[in-house]
Length: 604
Image (cartoon, rainbow, N blue to C red; front, side, top):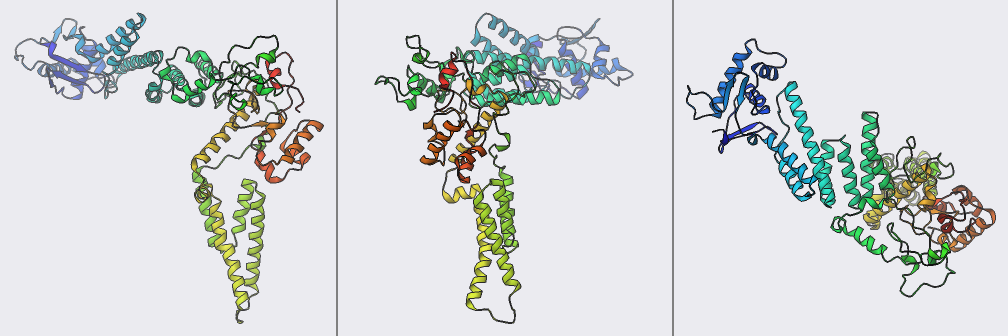
């Protein structure tokens, strides 16, 4: 008769007799049944039931109360039993009450056996069958077990089952990673990381799945999240496995994707790898224009720099390093998320004090304000000229000039100030008893409109979103500019913490093959003259002047020194400030690959 009973405790407690759900009665009666289900096939003493169901305030006549609830359970579990017939499903023995049901009738038992079966299949090398076993076992869960029950017995059982489920989820994720299903696994791991925020194995799998899906920046951001969480909440750092994976992602360790099926990569990554296969066999042709011409089948020099880090073809025969081309740059993700300099450096990024010459911290690009701040400033700035009848327009223009470091806006502020002074003077000297001439009335109205309406419109157009709508510049271009700005900031951060990264990743050297995207930074002291022609705002004469001054007087130490030595206009200086690096000339051994790529010490 017990073979027709089924019980669920992995979630809301429920029971079925055949295909009919059973009403298990009040909460304490359900708790008694839960205690018996935890010991299916084993007798449970009455005292143990009392201690589990009433942990804090047991009733004086505990055995009688337990007997009462047992009688209620017998009525619902054996509805066909005669009142005087001994119970077959729930019976009383010398050792206590015994629930005689098939262990497979309890979903928690089926879950544990399914996990054990999946583990055995995995050890036998049958990954797909192990994955199917685990999925079927995890599908038995419908919520947190023993909800509404308190006490040490239920807490221990709940913790044990939840821990088994977490391990099973981690094992299933591991099996999916082994079978190359990392792309479909990312969404599942997002939910699991939110459910178990401090389980490092899930974080490890999440980072690895993101990286194998071509999402290196998000993988590094996931490490930053767990690092911040552990340090802020518990005062500890991530474990060795997570730190090692973070370092390997920063170095773009090729073993992280070794053996991953091609279907696991996004189309963009596959296309990038196909482009890498077309890299010419002699990259030195791009670095040394005087070298012999490449074969007709080789792509033009502009195509020689791969979009991502790649493994170059075998070098050409010959003893000269230049004949075989430079060694490949160490590949890193496009977004370099960095650990705190207070902690040990990762492999591949040497330790050492930050370089005081690497980044001009006070002269970094201004980060755009959040949207709500920008909108609030625009509304307030537009209302001020309207409510002050134009006399406060110059204040708004002055604030924008300081924020954007714009000489034009500063001159506009001065113009609005003079116009406001003229308006106030005209009002103060106006004779109310004398009728103004048409010229005076037209002049006064024009000055008022210039300060009032034109000023308010000018402030409104200073909002970048409004200006983009008016000029028709697509938001995609603005988003691309913002992405490049972020990459430049991250490259500067990398240089500040690890000065040696400038050579390892060729930061600021668009003329060299590299896999690191620095957002278009240019090392003004190291790049060849032809790269100077690509700098924004420089005329051909200014470019020649910069190159000659650098050759004669040596490297530049700052943006201000460049502007003073070459007499560059302020508008050009503001345009170059975000893209230029002022790094000291590297001193390298002549036999190192980096020295071969860097060329002569003094740029020509």
